[in-house]
Amino acid sequence: MAKELTASKAVTWLSKRAPENKIVDPLDEFVENAVARGRRISAAQRRYVRGLLEKTIEAYQPGLAVQTSTLRAALEVGDLRLLTELFEDLSINVATDLLGTAGVAVLLARCRAADLIADPLAPLYRQERLNELLAQFIKFLDEHRKYLVLTGLPPKYFSRSPWLYAHLGRLYDTRQTSSPYCLDELDGRRRHVADFGPYTFLSADASRPRSPGQASPCRWEEASFLLGLASSDGRRLEDLRAAVFDAKQAALKTMIDAEREGPLGKRVCEQLVRRLHLRNVMFLISMDEWYLGKRTRPSLTLLPSREWSPGGLLNLMTVAGHVEAERETGAFSEAAQSVLHRAAASSSTKLSKSSWQIYFGWRRRFGKEVDEAIDRFIGQRREAKAISDWLDGRVGVWTSSPIGTHSEGAESTSISPGKPAKLPNEPEHMFIAVLLQHHGFAGDVGLEPIGCRQMAKTASMSSSTASELFKRHFGSHAAYIRCCQDHEQLAQKLRKLEDPNPQPERQLRGKEIAAPSEDDRSFAGVRQKF
Image 1 (cartoon, rainbow, N blue to C red):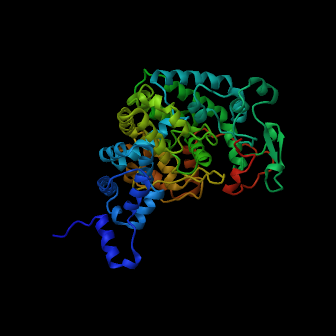
Image 2: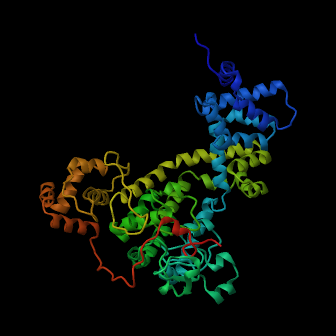
Image 3: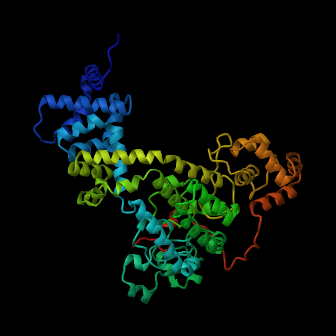
């Protein structure tokens, strides 16, 4: 029977085969440089630590322990870099005990959770406090409605909750400013805000390359659009602001209405479609992806971008998903009342430079109590994953249909027709979204009809429901097939389904500025940090 090949045996064998090119074992090197580090450590301890490292690395990624070059790289710059931090921040006995009982995968999960909890924008609130903040934020938005609807920017800072403010403070701002942050947020002295105004809007000469020196202060109406944002998209966003503001306020009120039953995320999505219409929802989601990056989903945006969050539908769905998850599991609410709250506020957190250092600093100061609390937090977050998965699926369906945006980087994504998002049935909206996706509406309209069974499978509904919807909108599925033979008739029908109450197209004012490259978005006058 062949003996098991361990890392030490492999290195010894290779060294004997090629003595002139002696291979240095990465684990021996790690024990010497990271574990011993000039400390007095016995030969028995070295052997024990090395064997423990080999065992835990093999459990984390089978086969990695015998791949010399790959293992060395993983220990230096990969996830296994945490092992260096482990032995640097903790004593040898504590580090080996923690590594032996937890393993690499668990330690990585704890480090990521600690990094999330310690973030200044983390929603580390008790459930009662979260409801209070939502009510206060609704009042804050109402107070500044006029300025928000005009500019898309909040004139004041909501200091009670940086998390809510960063997610929902803006309202699809479209014009260039000297800073993405209002003066009240940067300075905090209200008299300065009164003297200078909350923002400095900038106008750039479209006939010359854009640079900081060529942008001049101006009124909001004269300001240039954000770099890369097509003027047609910018003006459409400005036209929709009042409706989006009202939809946002209605959704926030739904979040603090604890008496109503049913999934909160689903109710918020239904409200958005009902108030804004499917066509506008698809457009706004695509613009969210322009601001935040393609394929951005609610599950990825719990911590908002202070600089780029548009305060749009994706941000709103993220907040709704978090509120629902807190009511279901209470992960952050419990963390706010545990040792994790004290740990997040400790000096070790502020001095730490990485998620590994944050967790190991907590472990050194608070002991095993931190492990128990952080493991409960991780488990509760996993229980709530179905909520964020549902919201991600809904966004995937909304972005699966082309919606005719022109801004650079705002092209819609698509989902595989064979692998539809697993969503609760909402027949009307799903039927329309899948139909628009199938025919490629907003581009060249495809005339190939979709079958009733394919519609049912893609839209996650029964065949009888799909048949009923074809009957409601076309008379029957056979009538729909006949409609597909007439390009103009099909286009008109799809246009009516996309927006049942179309508004007249708004005349564009001024000249359209060509969208520059993605790199130009980092220039001053777009959203430049001070």
